Structures are given as C-alpha cells and as structure tokens.
Image 1 (cartoon, rainbow, N blue to C red):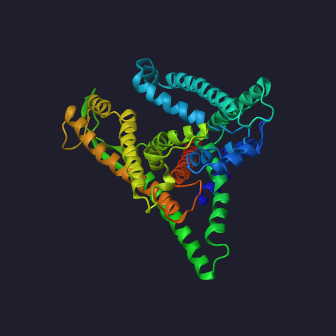
Image 2 (image 1 turned 135 degrees about the vertical axis):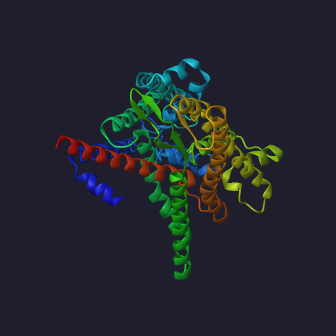
Image 3 (image 1 turned 90 degrees about the horizontal axis):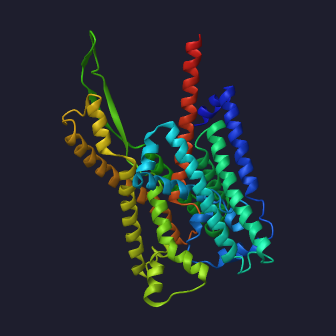
Length: 437
C-alpha cells in the first residue's frame, strides 16, 4: 500500500488528484466543526448520554460526530446513501428507470440527477423533522419560525454540499467520493474510541492486566480487518469458453474468459438495511420519550445490540437470531436486484460463449443461480462473523465504541477500492507513455 502511494506521488497528474482529494476531506472535517446558528450545541451531547438503546451509535459513526455536535454537516451524506438505495430498488420496480439504466452513460446521468433531487428532498424532510421535534425540546435556543427556518436551511445545505464534494472527488480526485467522505467520518471517531478503550481497560490497571488488555484489543481489531480483507477479495471465477466461428475467411473466437462472482456480492448493504430496520422502534421511542415495560419492553430490548450478549437475560438473544436472519434475507434480496443470471446467460448465448460442461440457455441460468445461492450464503455468514465479533466483546465486556464490524468493512473496502483505482490509473499512464514513444 505504501509503495503504491509513493509511486503515485511521483506522477504529477495522480499527485494532483490525491492532493485535491485530501484538501476536500479537510473541508469536510472543518465543516463538521461549524455549528448551526441558533442551536444549543450541548443539547445533543446531553441527549445522547441519556440514551441507552444504542440505536444512534451507528448514525453517529456515519456522521463523524457531526450529529452530536449539531454542525452544518449533522445530516452528512446519510440522505444521499438512502436516496441511492431507494433509486436502486426503484430501478427494478419501475420500467422507465430500468430503461434509463440500460441506456448507458446518458441514462446513468439522468438517474444520478434524479438521485440528487431525492437527496435534497430527504435532507429537507429530515431537517424539518429535527427542527420541529428537537427544537421544541430545547435544541433551538429561541424557538420561532425564523430560527427554525435557519436550522432547516443550514442542515439541508450542508447535506447537499457534501453530495457536491463527493461528486467533485469523483471528477477531479481519486476514488469514490461519497465512500471516501463516509470513510473519513468513521475514521475521525476511531481515536476517541481507542481513548475510551484505553481508559476502560488499560488505565489504572496493573502492568500485566494492562498489557493483556492491549494485546486482546489489537488481536480483535487485526482479526476483524483480516476477515474483512478476505471477505472483500474472495471471488469465484466461472470459466467461460467462446466457440470458434468464421468471419469472412478467418476463423475467430475460441478464447477463454471467466465471470467473476464476488462472495460478498451485496457488500455492507445487508447490515445497513438490517440495522436501520431494527433501530426504528428504539429511535421512535427516544423521540417520544416513552419507555415500554412488560412484554413490549422485552421486545424492544431484543432489538438493542447492547443486550444480545447479556447472558443473565438469554431471551434477548432472539434479537440476534432475527438480526442474522434479516442480514441473510437482505443479502439474497440485494444480490437478486443487482445480478441477473437470466440476462448473463442470454448474453453468453448471443456471444457464442458457454460454461464448460453446461449447455447454453436455461441450464446456464440454473447453474449460475445455484452457484450464486451458495456464494451469497457464504458471504452473508462471513459478513455476520465480522459484524458480530465487535458486538460480542461490546456486550460481554461493555466496550462501547462507535466503530465495529460494519465500520471496518467500509474503511477497508474503500481503502482497497481507492488503491486499485490508483494502480489502474498508473497502469493506464504507463500504456499511454509506451504508445507515445
């Protein structure tokens, strides 16, 4: 990794892109410290301390603490992520959007434009809800129409600006802009979380216990990172052979290729979907200030990750089983809308390609369905192992940190993706230099 970055900085064009990306990320972190005018910045800090359901830790990590500080980037890029997911789902459900998606670059530009409008709409809706809901409870110092409007405008503009930053990084920088902004937000919380772990498990302990705690923490983090890298890079390559055919007087074709199927085809999307769905009841109860008891209180407690490994109350483990089931379901669901075996089989047949030992057409589709089913299950199980390791130690030892398996998947995935893009740009430049000579 370091060698790739060192070689990249020696190339002027790539060095400019890297510096541009770095400067934009500085702007993101500076904006995360800029307060929204007219708000009580200590309100959310106090409010977060009163929450014991853990439903907002996921959101706090994604915003890099901007939500707790109530900065102009409090909503961050979460509206864009939500709108992107909505558009992906609607592309399958609405024929007009599906047609746009197949139109190539022009169609994708139209979908991107629609995604921008949906992002601004979601940011506006969330800003209004926060200004009204939290404003009356003390978030806005002097609650009136103008002050509420200034908060709504600031939060909506902050989210739209971050979307613009992500697109500028795509255009003039390196890597996927939105993913990089999300990664830097998560990374900004890591020093604070490590300091909390140090205070909880190392500070004030005997030398032997302190060293053992440090080694365990490092081992858990390294194990999770290694598992994420293996999960991210794991690919099943389906061999494809193309038949020979006559073109004029020449015999062409006969070459071999492959269809790369990633083991973790859905990425971190299933975790985001499942976590968001299970946190909705707790978030609604937090907004309303109500506390449920009895049967319904137990049900809500099952949805709280902090209770899953509370062995004194094993009934809460039902929530963990539900969480695993939701992740497996969303892994299959998301894969089904992003990879179409029927379309792949038809394209292979049209191009004269076939999988050795499998007849073209429907048998190829059935074979791809079967292989994909195995891969999705393996990927979902691997994803669950990565995500549950930090949750287990958080529950057993009370190591409450904002970063976990989901955050590490995002961090490692974005770093690997960015490095691959840098290497590909260096390779393209070498080819251009060779051809120009």
